[in-house]
Length: 218
Picture: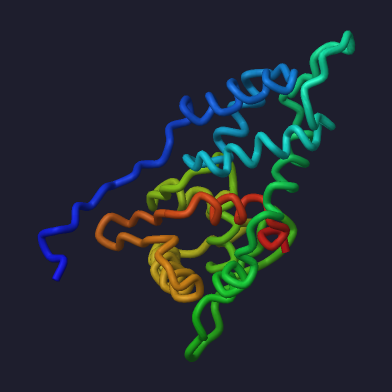
């Protein structure tokens, strides 16, 4: 019987300023200079995870062609805030994690009973129901782990051409999606607070997969 003998320790996600120190300390060891704006992007994508930040920095080195420190007159290699470069870094990093089957189930939603779901046209060139829209909305900029109803509704409405899902449809999709994801993962990697209308992603790697996997664009 462990009742009364267990102490719960709540580990918070790392702040952006602390995550950036990983880059500030590591890059100079390999002779890499950096633009602060580029490190800011990596820290934002890491979403509070030091492990993910370390892996983004590692893949930055790979993309820059740096494997070890070189003491020569060639000058420092620079990590710049270049969209194409940072995109390649993130695309390389997302290969380290796979939530593909979970995202596919999330996009499908629960089995329909009765009438089919409403289909909405989007500014991304495809059409989908509220579950498909929810997945895409979670992947948009800026990256965040906590989605309150207002900003989430705005993301979904903004991507729709013509009619958008109703508020009750969006909250219903959040509730069902949380159950689908957690059942598929056999873990609580997302959470829906129906009382406060807040959708939380508890696993930064899941958010990163949503943002950089090709599954959210098809």
